[in-house]
Image (cartoon, rainbow, N blue to C red; front, side, top):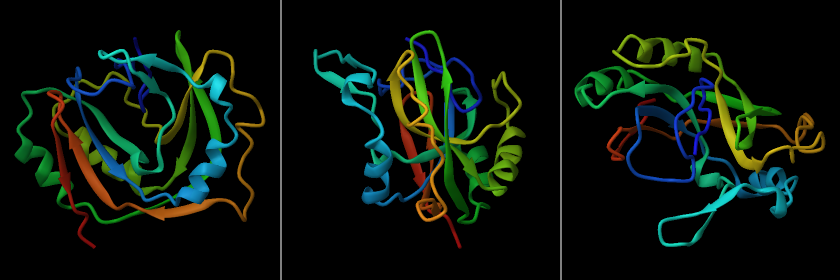
Length: 192
């Protein structure tokens, strides 16, 4: 199975954990459960994309508030030394993003319901990380935060309705994670 990542690049199954073709650097953001549940309530369970894992258990395509993250760069190979990534991300400061506009992108098997993320520093961080050797095939950075993987053609205008000014969320990055191609993850604090 394939999915399109933050750069609209086909990268593999979003519901599977473990080895990946490439590594990724992500910023994680705390999202209050009340806010997240309100957004997730726009989605009917019957429209959520899911599949069975290796043990035959159903894996749901809904993302949880604790998984809320924005990919900064996807495309690192297993030959990239951790120290090179760490040198750059150790310069990163906590940043704010705004979640307001909801949209979707599609691939052949399912659609991705997502927040378009507002936060200028994300582009700066992506540019710095792009200086490291990587295999990213799409140079245009489009930061987003995934809400849910949807069955093809089930996204409605009600789901993609923008949040009102009273409902929007501004949140500050809580941590940075380097997810390596071998599936291991290294977590780093953001130094304010």
